[in-house]
Each structure stands twice: as C-alpha cells, then as structure tokens.
Image: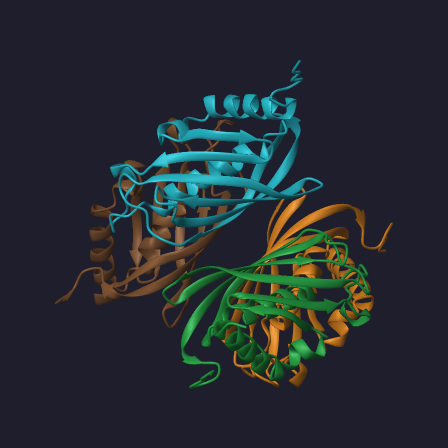
Length: 146
Length: 146
Length: 146
Length: 146
C-alpha cells in the first residue's frame, strides 16, 4: 500500500473513532484512498419520516460523513462550508445506502467534493456536492509513516 | 384561530406523529402557521462529529424537518427536490437549536423555502434553502374543518 | 445518424436560431446528442469584470445555454428552475471556453444536468449544476423524422 | 455621509469603471452602502433566449454584479466562490430589473450574500445566493478618507 493511502486510512479511522454521530447511525467505512471515501448506512426504522421513506437529513448525514472523510485524507484539517443535495429517489427501511465521495477540485484553501448515494440495487438516491475549507491545523499532528 | 392555521396545525401534527426520524432526534414543534414552521432540537452527545461539534447532517435534518412541515401546511402533499445548506458557526453539545422555516415562493408545482437555524444565544448557525415539489395527493385526504 | 440524434440536432438548431442572447455572445454549438450538448464561447473584452477576468455572469450564461440545449433534446419543452455554479479558476480575454452538458437525472417532470466548463488548455473553469422542469408543450410541435 | 458609506461608494465606483461586462449590459448602480448594493438592468433584445424571455445568464449576471459590489464595499478584495440562483418568474424585453444585494454572513475569509431580483412591478424574478472569499489585497490600496 502506498504511503498516501496508508496515511489516508489512519486519518479517517481517527476521525471515525471520535465521530459518535456516524457511529450511532451505523455508518461503516468501506474504502479510503487519497481524496476518496466510500461509506455505507442501512436505513433504520428510526430514520423514517412521515411518508415512511428515509428522512432527507439522514441521507444528507451519510453524504456529509463521506465528504468529511474524503476531504481530510491529506491530514489538513478541512471543514464544510456548505453543501447542496438533490434527492432523486426515495430510500426505504432496510435499504443499504452507499455514499461514494470524490474530491473534484482543490484551489488554495477551498475545495469541492461530489458524493453519489446509491441503494443496494445500484439506483441513484441522491447527488451531494460539498464545499470545503482548509484550516491551518492537522487531523493527526506531526503524523509520520514509515 | 383562523381556519387555515387550524388546518396547518392538524396536518403538521399528523406528519410529526408518523415521523420517527424527527421524534427520535428530540425535535419539537413550536410554531405552525400557513407556510411557516418553527422546530427545535437539542444537540446530543450522539449527534457530534470527530471535532466534537454537531454533525452537519443533524443540523441539516433539523432544517429539513422544518422545511417539510412548512411546505405541507396547505394539505397538498409536497416533497423535497433538494436543498442547499451553508454552515455559519459550529453548534456544540447541549446547544438548543431553533429552525425557522418560511415558504418564500410557490409557482405552479415547485416552490422554495428558507430556513434559518439559530442557537440559544440567537447566533446564526446555518442557512438552509429547500426546493419543493407538489404531488397530486393530500396529507389528510378530504380534511374538513368546521 | 440515429433518429434520436437527428431529432436532437433539429430541436437545438431551432432553439439556437431564436436565441439572440447566445448568438450575440458568440456561442457556437459543437456537439448535440440526446441529453448532451457542447457549446463554446470566446471571452471578449466586453465580458470582463473589474479584475479583468471573465464576469461570472458570462461564464454562467455559457453553462446555462449548454444546459438548456441538453435538456430539450427530447423535444419536451423544459425550463430551468435554478442552478448552482462553482468558480474554480478565472478565465481571461480571448480564452476559448467549452461547456459540456450532460443530463444526469430525469424523474417525472424534474431533472438535473451537470455542465463542466473548461478553457482551451483543458483546465476546469467552473462546475454548473442545473435543475430542470418539463412543461407540457413541445419545442417543435408534431415533429416527425423519416 | 458616514465615512464607511463614502468609502463604499468610492470602491464600487472604481470597480464599475473597470467592469466592461456590467457597463455593456447597461447595468446602473442605484444604492451603495456597506454590505449593500442595488443595481438595475433593462432587458434588451440581445438578452433573450429562444423562448423570448430573458436568458438566465443575463439575470445571473445582474445578480452577480450586485453581489460583487456588495461584498467589496469594505475595501477587502473579495471574489465569488460560487452561487446558486432560483428562477421564479420569466423576465421579458424592456423589463427593468433591480437586484438588491445584502451581505448576510461574514466568518473569517468566507461570506454569504443574498440578492433578490425584481421587475418594475415589484414581482420577484429570481433569488441569488452568492458565496464569497476574501483575498489578502485591497480594491483601492491605502485608501484614506478625510
């Protein structure tokens, strides 16, 4: 495994270990590479809205976690300025959702990250575009990998 | 109380009663009027991300619930096409967040709704702009109010 | 050429012939296929802002025209509900910009279209995501192609 | 006139004088105050699309200019990261459009600005929300006002 990939995995694991919101919603990290993250979540009964479809906030949360992991893989602490989500299809209880996040732009301190959220049939559920901002700190200070 | 306001409250109550996602996150409905909703949520330990600030998805979820309530007050079933959120300040554990949603446009079947999310000090935490789409059904079919 | 592609080209040509805004800004249609359009524009002196870079509105206009052409290729009259643009790099006088638009989602009457705008070096200048809405009319009524 | 308002007017005038894109489209500055700008534009024949309504790019351009003026009133050079526009009603030839821009948030180097675009009847034509980024330079270096 390349050094950058190893670093990326270490950083995201450290973020996830401190991220109770993602843990409590059953999110699982599947793939981490530099500028790339794939995260899954199963839609639970307590994630449904009044139409008995997955609450938009829970779909957004999955996208937001994948976005946060992808933009932090380089160990420069990076936060969300904002995001846009488009809902394409409803998700239902027990659906297994996968969010695939890819950094598409980095210019100075600001960046963009596209996340596609699909269900277990491969159907597109939502598109998420996050806008990021780099802080002047690191996720893991003075990280060195041999 | 005017008839429209009474109708609005009945519809949103029916939506909330079926909305486990909003209930489980401790959201409380404070104000309902036609095209208007105010909803609160206290940030819990299980809503924090790795920075120990409120996960963006939980802030979005609060905005999304307020949006959903506001756009359905007229008893025309209305769903979210998408939304944009801008994060202005972090929220922390035990913060009491209030989302105030106002429908700002309705043109044919599509509409817009602005939600401002503040904390207990009145500081702005996030702006949320939702894009809605009216279906051809009602939330409470054949609702009549004397 | 397939029938759908022939139809697409006829419709977009008819749109362009009536579209003085695109013509006056020197936009040229390069590729038309169903759900796909590529349009170019050279940045002129009268398109510059106070920083002597291309005015954001002119970059948006190029993206918007490509979006409009792509979503109308099926001869169902389709209008823009709105769009989001992210500016990645400035464009300068005499730059040749290309906007490549692809419909990424169609669900009932609403759809999404992604447009990538690049300069003559292939550098990404802007991402544009348009949200469309289908009317109940046609661009060319009763179009038949043998 | 307060010093801040005088500064704001000087800066925006300097920006406008160098902004051929806004000049060529007949935009006129009506009101400038700190974090606030009002700009008008009359829809011309060369701004129409194939539906004979004002091209979305021209409406966006008006909003973008008002946004640029409002966010630069403090003499800190500020550029657009991106923007979202929602089209509410079409505009037609000879309509007089007014864009009213107000900075709604400034946090560190990033900010937000809301622009409402109306026609001569006061009808809302579009909402525009711009996302700004402060550079480390000034519009007018070493500006001093007695």
